[in-house]
Length: 55
Image (cartoon, rainbow, N blue to C red):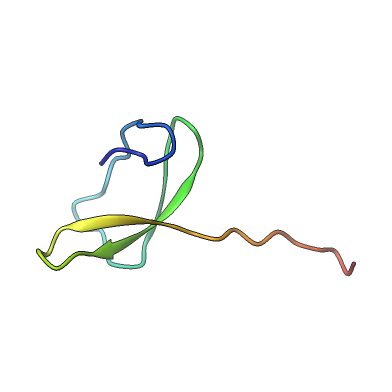
């Protein structure tokens, strides 16, 4: 699949499951796999929440 951020190639494992997180090896962006109506996978941007360390 193509990364929506940098257009790099993101390898999707053959045994991938819906909800699995994949990361682009080129830019480091993370995406969640979701099933489309045709049964193939799509990429959904995930919200990465950083630690606030008690602030």
